[in-house]
Length: 165
Image 1: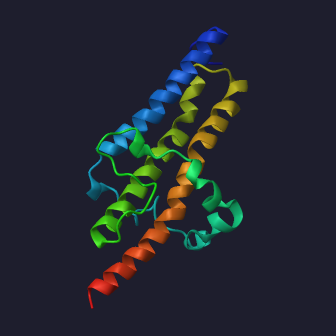
Image 2: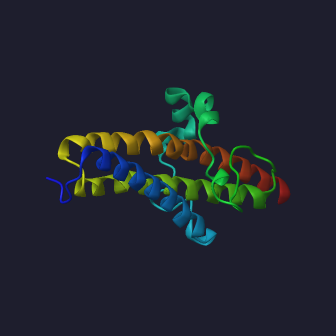
Image 3: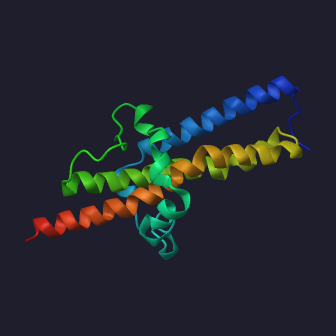
């Protein structure tokens, strides 16, 4: 049983507001993190062998075909880093882009981990819907970062090897 009992329309309103606050708050929180805290080789963000350098997302999910429809968080926060297109091929820019994929991935992990708090005011039978929203709203964006990061790291390594010659 939820700790807080609400009428149906209040429950809907509170859920919409709570998800909005969590999504926006996660974006704001990670936007405020300094770059040196966002390491692409940290446990959560490091690439796994089963991801096959991001190819698994292309092969089995067709991510390259639907990624253009996902929002870019840079549209919501002024002075943030746009990730929709690769605009430069310098090592500095590519390194920053990699960091920003970590920031974006973290932004989408937070709401996925926050959904259990909805048990405080939602009846048990609605919790699968809260999880479904968390997954549908965040997993595609999270996977996009997992797809882009190995590609960016490859280009970054090539760029660095060319400049070191």
